[in-house]
Length: 462
Image (cartoon, rainbow, N blue to C red; front, side, top):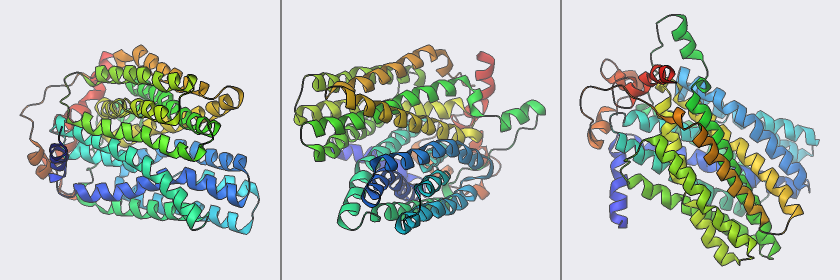
C-alpha cells in the first residue's frame, strides 16, 4: 500500500479530540521504559565493574515490576487513570533517584538491589493508552483493531530507539546520563498522560447484585480462563524476545562484531513495527481467537529462519534478513492477543488484565535471557536460536490447548456501529461529562456493552 494511503488510514484515528495529546505523552513514558535496561547495565558495569551485579539489580526491578504492574492496573480500574498515575509516577522517581545516589556515594551493593526492587509502581502507559482507544472507538471494531496495531508499532519503535539513545547518552556524556534521562522522561510522560483528562475512560459502575456481583467486581481477571491462556502464551512469547536478544549478542560477538548486535536487534523490532502497521490496515475476517492461533503458528515458523542461519554459520547480513523476517510475525500475534484481553474482560478490568499480560511478557523475557545466556556459554554460536523457536512452539501449544477459552460470544447490541469520525466525536467527552447515554461508553457500544456482558456469557459457556 502506498505510504500516502498508509498515513491517511492512521490519521483517521486522531479525529477524536485529545487522541494525539495522550499518544505523544504516553510515547515519552514508553521510550523511557525501553531505555532503563541498557542504561542500568552500562551504569553499573562502568561504576562498579560488574556485569553480574548489573544483571542482578536489573532482575530485581523486573521481578517486582511484574508483581506491581497488575496491582497498579487494578487501582487504575477502580479509581481512574489520573488519580493513580500521578502518585505512582512521583513515587517511582524516588527509588530511582536513590539508586543513582547510592552508585554515586559508593553504597553497598544490597542498597542498589533494594532501590531497584522498590521501583515497582511504574504505570503501564501502553495498557492505559489501549484502554483509551477502546473507549474512544467503542462502537467501531475496525478502528479499535487499527488502534491496537498502531500501539504495537509504537512499542516496537520505542524498543528500537530507546536502547540506542541510552547507549549514546551513557557513552558520550556520562554513565549516569542514560538513567537520569530515562527517569525524567518517564515521570514527565506519565504526568502529561494523566493530565489528558478529556480522553480518560469513565469508571464503570459497580455491580449491584449482591455477593456474586461483589466477587466479580473485586475478583482477579485470572478467574477468566481465556486470560490465563493468554498470560501463559505471552510468557512463552517473552521467552522468545529475551532468548533472541542474548543469542544475537553472543553470535555477533563470536563473529567479532559485537557492536553490530544492536543493529541486528533493531531489525527484529523493525520487522515487527512494519508488520504491525500493515496488519492494522487489514479487515479482520476471522474471530480473534482464530487469528491468535494463526499468529502463533506464523511466529513458530519464521523463527526457524534465524535458527537455520545460525546453525549454518551465516554472516551478519543474512542473519539480519532472517531476524527481520522473524519479527514480522510478532506484531500480529501481540495485537490480536491484546484485542482478546479487551474482549474477554469487562471494561472495569481492562487495565489490570492488560498489565497481567505485560507482566507475563516481562517474566518470559527474564527467563529467556537467563536460559539463552547459559546456552551461549556451553554451545556453539547460533545454537541458541533453537531456544526462541522452541519457546514459540510452546506458545503455540498453549494457545492450541486453550483455544476453546479464546472464544467470546457477544450479546447482540441494538443500533449500528458508528464510523471513525462519529465515534471519535461522541467519545471526546471528559470523564466527568459522561452521563446518561455517554456514560454508557462502558456499556453502550459493540465493545463496551459486549465487554461488560462478556464475563457472564463466558462463565456460563465455560
